[in-house]
Amino acid sequence: MAKLELTGNSYHCRPDSELDKLWATHNAQWRDSAQIASQWQEAAETKPELLEFTSRGNFFEILDEHQITLLVSREYEHLLMGLSSQDGKPVVSFMPMPHPSGLAFDETSGIVHVASTRNPNQVFSLSPVSDFTPRMDAPGQKMSGSPLVPVFSRFLPGCLYMHDLALVGGRLHANAVGHNAIVALAQEGTYKRVWWPACIETEDGPVFGQNHIQLNSIAAGKTLESSFFSASSTEISDLRPGHADYPVDKRGVIFSGYTREVMATGLTRPHSARLNSGVVWVDNSGYGELGFAEDGHFQPAVKLPGWTRGLCFRDGLAFVGTSRVIPRFSQYAPGLQVETSVCGVHIVDVQSAQILASLIWPSGNQIFAIEALPQSFSAGFPFSHPRLTEREKLLFYTFSTDKQSQGGL
Image 1 (cartoon, helix red, strand yellow):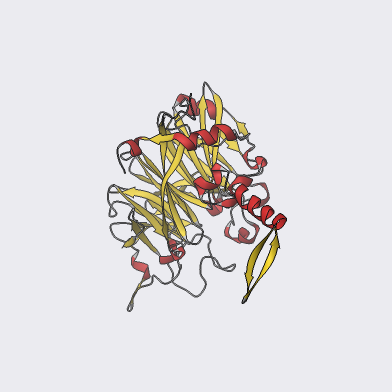
Image 2 (spheres, helix red, strand yellow):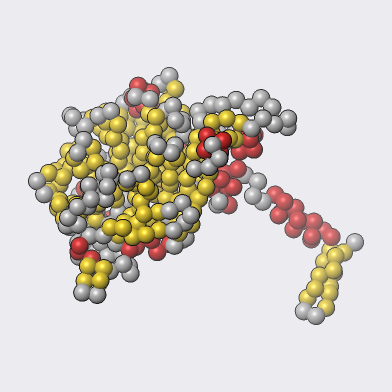
């Protein structure tokens, strides 16, 4: 039997075999839980080699000792990684996501926020699974590790070009790199510019129309005035940060939230500014360094094997990311051995500046952010290698979070 199909002003018949094949294709699509959770069809195609790692030193033992779960965003591989440990043994998990960058853990609300910076930008908000909905068709579910699952996402215009995320005064903020400003984000998907440096102000008003200074990270204080922000320069010029000839060496700065002026100089493509015990620490990416601001200048503390980006602190330890250098941006790394740079996470003792341990992804590329959570909050993400598809299906079929049981966020 054939089906009728309207073409122009007349009908013609399409064979059953063609329609059956078409419908079978549609029926098979969007069946992978990773696709649905990340709102991204290619999420089912994460290559196993991207997850393979080597470790140096007692990396997972340190995580176990301090009861830490690390979340790592690997932006160009479209991956979120969870690194935890049980009895000193690795617990490695992942979640596909389009171009993830900034991470922010809201301990008060029990939510992890992730910036996804393709066009349009998104912010995913994830919560740990706390229980399973009782079901006759899915008996025997057992909780393990409280994996993080998305509970909502919001869409924002791509021109924001969001990078870092941070909680300031209990509210979620982002670097709107495309606006040379900091924006406050509302859950319903709106934003408001709330801070910008004095250097973008002109007689015609602040320049929000395009990225000029690569204002890309937030060292979050209790208020915007007590926070600090990193940028690649202070100059509005025809050459902008993505241009191959954009000058970078020693032009990077840290801005004071209070004065909106420069408080530290001497950086090269800085990222991941963070406050630790009242000191502004920052990744000096172009030289592969971790250091801090002191007396108006950047002071390097330790050299690492790659483009430093991603930084968090816990229990006197710094967790620092290094990335390979994208070839077309090699001129942005004048202080690096580009060919030997690695993609990994390094544990640094803050007092001694010694590298205690490292985890390296040999096929890895770019790390953007690192966030440390208590293991008791979550051990990571729902997906592991090899994929346990039946377990994943049951989890997403019946999961419950504390936020859902409380009736909202």
